[in-house]
Length: 389
Ligand SMILES: C[S@@+](CC[C@H](N)C(=O)[O-])C[C@H]1O[C@@H](n2cnc3c(N)ncnc32)[C@H](O)[C@@H]1O
Image (cartoon, rainbow, N blue to C red):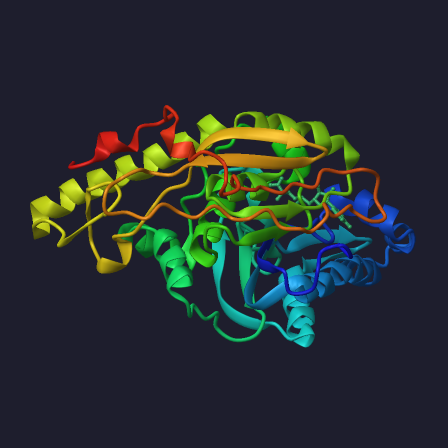
């Protein structure tokens, strides 16, 4: 990450390898062989601490590259494990939080991602006999940390970009809840189930929500533990620039193959969001009367004045060169609306992961301004279809 400039990133979204979850023992031990030694000699506390020290290096870099007012969102689960005769919880959530606070981050209200399971082995310990059973581990955390104080939006163009990045009122009510129970079954983004299991990939919807909630179109999103590239896909789908690092070169082809379908996958998501909104409006109108505002771009009703500029980033094309992916977006061409100004490609050279083998670095760049407006092309998805509904 050393090639990512200081204070250049608006949002970091990631899920690291989880300390003391067995599937990550090897990758941690490759980075520090003492970890393997500690596990072999059944020194669980030492292995856990050394694993976290590997992660600490990354959190430190994340703090450096984040802009003031930028967010770091870390999805992490605690681990239960028996080492020798000792069974206990390794609480990575609190270990990471403690370190990040020392770095200077401020903790903000966090999300409990409830991953309810029907697995027969979810109840651990002595069953129906007391004083030897453990409660289930069916949740993970999505920590939300901020560097510095609240981000300011000063100029008119900053304010407009923020308004175009708005989400719907009813999405706010769901997304900004501290317990997420509805992520299961909303996995999208074209990922093979086996790869997902093997890499601990999080649902596309998780990254998609966080990016919409905590960043603006044209912002830069970073994922230092890219895995199958879910964060980058979500950034592409929301009109954000993005950068990712991954230590495992075997994942390169999986990441690339997921990106092949980014255009239809993203556009279907936009259609789904709009359809869901229209159903909400219909229902709401029948119980409370019609909402008092309407979207400038699409014409449909919205609940508040904050949503009137809402604009979805509809994709038209993806082009890859040397692990840099460029996305072209269609801008809605509606009277009374100002199309989103495309982000200028950043001058940052594509960062290379160190000290890892060649890995994908992904940057998404909307088309430069001098190109013919993308919205003159035949759209892949006609958002105008929704106008007036
Ligand atoms: C939990 S997975 C991330 C899954 C990802 N969120 C997704 O949806 O596919 C963690 C990833 O971090 C990678 N990793 C571990 N240590 C790393 C390091 N030091 N630098 C970069 N990547 C690393 C692992 O290879 C693994 O793919």
